[in-house]
Length: 172
Image 1 (cartoon, one colour):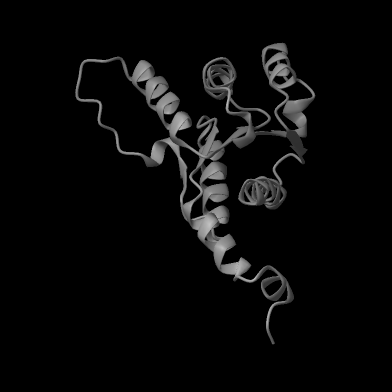
Image 2 (cartoon, rainbow, N blue to C red):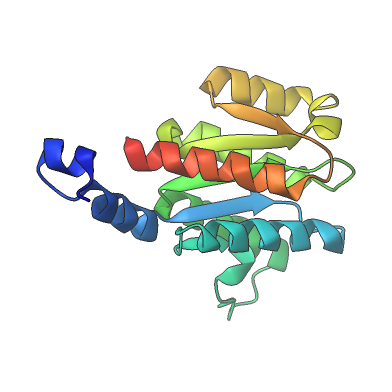
């Protein structure tokens, strides 16, 4: 049976959406400390890949090419800044009970330097959102970035939220 949407629009929408999913470059930014935080980001990456977003990465997925004497913290900051500029969708994930200084700085950089807000979303665990720093609140409010809260430790809900944001990007 033919797809009614395809018949009305005159082309195969599902194939086009599939192409957008495969080509949408998604960068996930979040805490890597403690170790379980990085594992949760890896689970999120895998979840999005399994749902068709095969071009989804963490900053750590990109090769380390620091061949200079540059300080590793400065190197990682520069690397994440470059990757944010090259991504179609940046997902900033704030976990409760984690060291979120790095992702806070990345969000601040994004808001002040990149300002391509259509491809940026903030996801906070509710335990973290209730104690969100004023630095983050000011940036999110000033930039009017859409954000959502997820239940503490609910990675299925985290994946669903990230997937919904990716789907929004495919439709714009």
